[in-house]
Length: 259
Image (cartoon, rainbow, N blue to C red; front, side, top):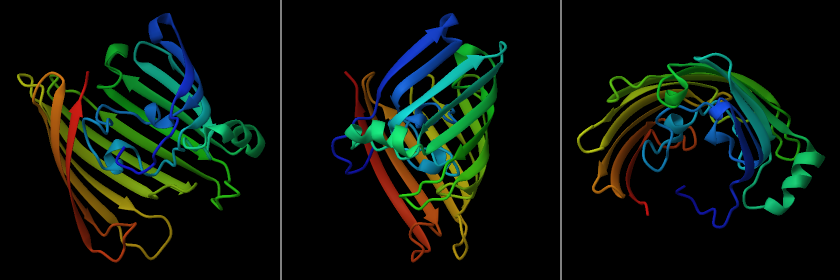
């Protein structure tokens, strides 16, 4: 999304469901961001644009590559999700996936335990803890690391979705060492429009960099059933990846057509 990656192979997997989906696993070439630390506002095509709201930036989730994961409902409300993935995954080099996974043996492990209002609303009413561990990446010169993240989101009256997310990492090559995000999405029932607002505080790893603050607001205008237009405004104060700037404004406009 919004990059010059050119051609890549992102998903080639087998997904098996049991007990009407309450027990399932996935195996193959996977994108761990499809299931690690998910909540109801993580779609970059239709919701936020900035990664601090789409993912937890303290989790060094690898790019697409070989991996496996499982999920199970332990009770009507309690679930567990876990798996591993190649920390060196590269969707632009699918011919090297097997060599990377089996020869280098550098993996990202994750385990998530959460509470749901119900299985049918698992993406909307979800509170969970995610723990992770990443092996050393010798060629990339990245040391091993571990961390813990919290996420809580609730869909109130199928209209408001407030969320609170926080994470901590110790090594592993994560973008941020500590982070706290909060915000809300508002769904307009009559028009299917969506407005969203988020605030984030993040502490970059290492020393010498100021804390980063991010704000984003967007409005998804559902022009027809198949066409949406989303203007988006972001403000990043003391950006960690551009310390020469005190603040950066980002203006975006997305169009999405489905067939």
